[in-house]
Every structure is written in C-alpha cells, then in structure tokens.
Amino acid sequence: MFQLATFAAGCFWGIEDVFLNVPGVVATRVGYCGGRTDNPTYRDVCSGTTGHAEAVEVAFDPDVVSYDALLKIFWECHDPTQVNRQGADFGEQYRSVIFCHSDDQHASACASRTDHENRNTFRRTIATQIVPASVFWEAEAYHQKYHQKNGGGCGF
Image (cartoon, rainbow, N blue to C red; front, top):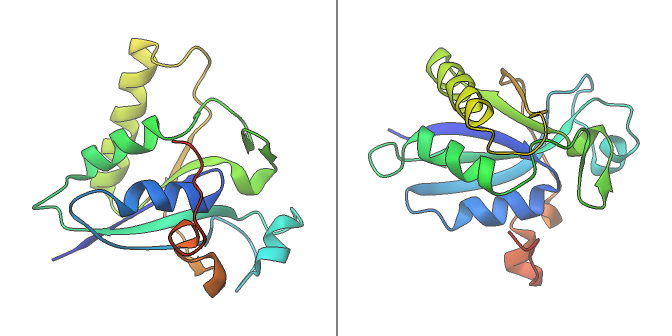
C-alpha cells in the first residue's frame, strides 16, 4: 500500500523534479497546501493572499523508500533556513513546510529537524514549519512535471 508525503521547499517545479527520480516514489503532483482559500489558482497563490505554499505531494512505496529517506532528501534539496523564500523566489508561497499525514510522520519530521539543529547542519536557524497536512489543491496541468515537459531544472 502506498503512502503520501507532502513537502514545500520553494518552487514546486524543482522539488517535484527531485522526488520524481527517487526509487520507490510512484507518483507526484504539484499544488497548493496550507492556505485559507478553496481551489486556489496559481495567480491567487502568487498574489500572497491565500496563505498557500507551493508543494509537492509524493506517493511512495514504504517497502522501497522510507519516509525518513524522503525527509533526508527534503533537507538536502533546499535551504530550510530561509523564511518565505528560496533563492530569487520570495513570498509566503515559497516557505519551507513539511505537511504530515500521520502522527508517525510528524514524530519523524520533528526528530529529523531536531537532529539537524543539534548537529548544526545549517549555519542558520531552521525555519521549516512542521504541520498537519491540509487539503492539497492540485495545480494547473501546465505545472505538472514541468521540467520533464519543458527541460530545465533548479540546480539541486
């Protein structure tokens, strides 16, 4: 049985690209999570008024890849110390968030963040939010697997 993991780490095109290449990840979709507005569009989210983060929902086979392994990839593929931005992209929609689908995921995410804090993995304080998963609103079709369809990458 597959499980879901949802992560926000800046532009959803880049983080989706990272997780698409992980053995055990069976599907991804990009969208909007953690906001106040039902059925937001990309334009709505970019306005900064919805509270949503650009996120990737990852369906994975836990017999092939563990949630902890996905967390490791999450921490490595972006700068979790930046508040409401990643690189040149800025705004609340680009914040770093782990959206947890279970108590076990929440415990693993918190333990992982604490481990990084204790080891001083990052030179600044981790800004990543760890919150319960909320409704995931799928982004428009042209955003799905954007780098596969259009080339490019975010340099992770």
